[in-house]
Length: 452
Image (cartoon, rainbow, N blue to C red; front, side, top):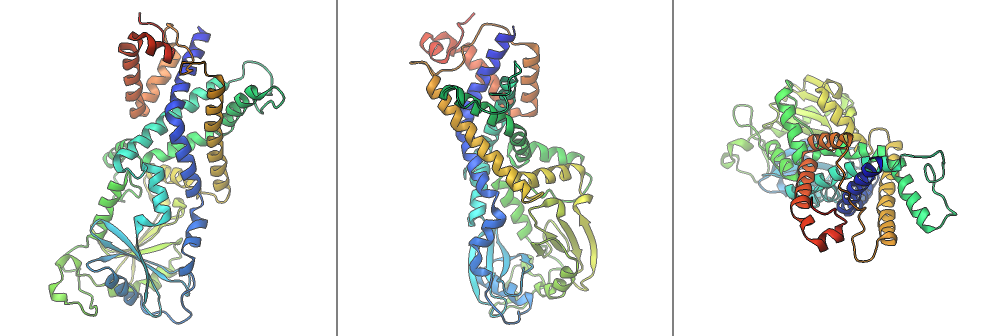
């Protein structure tokens, strides 16, 4: 019975790897690049680091220059400058688009205009999370991540030592031939990185379309706090959120700002807002010592007042300040610790996933895990290529034995927690049982047992 169970688990492990390996290589590579966002972004924007030595113009004038550079746009957020010499970053919204404008704070010259989603690290983010395929790509990545979780769990069972030797269990045996070396390298790499990889996979699920969408529904149904969810489940959801942030409220609080060459009488009501209030708010925000980068945003559908919030990668260090535009008074300050429990758990998970919670050790662990996953993929392909019998796929042969209750319970549990995994496992089982086993050549190629 134990041998049959081992063979069944090995078979699930093989097919999980067959589907997952290309995605694991992709996710590990793109994730490895994204880990170095704190180092790469300043390097990519180095030309904006030292643009002036002269005194800066008022923040409202810098905002006006950015808005003039993108006709029809509204202020999304003013990014508090990191230094007096650096170009000012102003985020402006146009419909569902977010555009970053770089402005010389002294001369008000526009130095650059780029769509936020065209920036290098945002492209890597979407390549990693949805293969640049939108909602469908996000679901495909989620499916691959779910199968990778199954692959790692079954791999740990297959690794579990059945004798007292350390060679081949904790370190690879180097003098017993290439076949043994590649087997040991695969097993031991899996051992050392499995826990880290499982943590990364689980912490990435809140971003996914299906699983993350269910989590969003649960959050909305139980959370009594009005704080908006600060992570998105797809690029489409992010565009919807951005559009809401770009839509400014109408009514008595939306006063027009005088800008050169603009007829305020012809402006739509929703764009009439007093952006000059930012000149009063900047000193107040600086005195709050919010973790940078700090975004000062006008009222929107998400917020009825001006707000200043941290956009730090280390999410537990973030805080938000609500401001009175007329007086500059701080109306409210909220920290990460005041968020709902679910938001805090996910915030910690996302910070770990991005290597930002305890740098540089967090980044080092991320690099170790990514390189370990790449090693797993390469060693798996080499092992399969060296061991595969001629004319067949090389999957571990199936037996007609019944599934052990413990294995069935594990598969059912994983299928419930990870619905895409559960539905795809059920589909595979039905196809194999009702179709593939009935054709002798297919049955032989896949190593299936004959139909009962």
